[in-house]
Image (cartoon, rainbow, N blue to C red; front, side, top):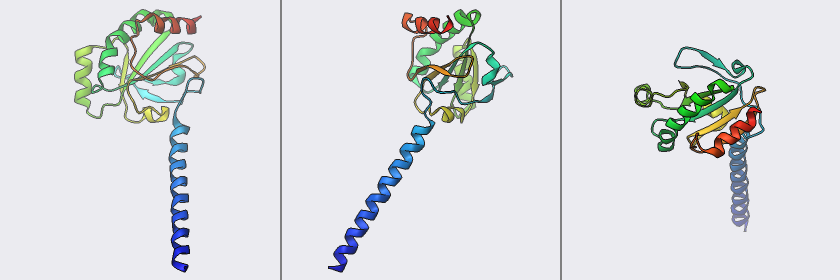
Length: 172
C-alpha cells in the first residue's frame, strides 16, 4: 500500500515537472518572437561594404530586414525580385538589409558572387535569434520609429503587386 502511494506521488511529480518544463520552453520561445506591431530589437552589424549599421541609422527610411541562407531554396528564389525591389525603392526611402545565417563564409561569398544582390548584405550568426527567426527567409519591415510594421514569414516575390502595394501604403 505504501509503495503504491509513493509510485503515485512520483508519477504526479514527474507530470508536474514535465508541464513546468514545457511551459518554460514555450515562454522562452514565445517571448523572443518579434511580431508585427512590436518594437524591433536594436542591433549593430557590419555590412559587407564595411558600413556599420544600427537600427537608428536608417533615419526616417523604411528598413526591410531580411534573414536568409544560401542553402534555402525560397531564399535563392526571392533574391532576384528582392534586388529589383531594392533598386526600384532606393530613391523612395526604403533600405534593404539582408542578413545571412550561413555558417560557411565561402558558401556565403559564392552566393553573393553568383547572384550579385543589389542591397546591403551581411553575415551574422546571432541577430536572427533576437527576432525569433528560425525559418528562412523571414522579413521584417521596420519604420523610422523602430516598429515592425510588416512581417513576411516566408519567401516573397518582391515585384508582386500585393507586396509593392503593402510597401507603398507604408510610405504615404
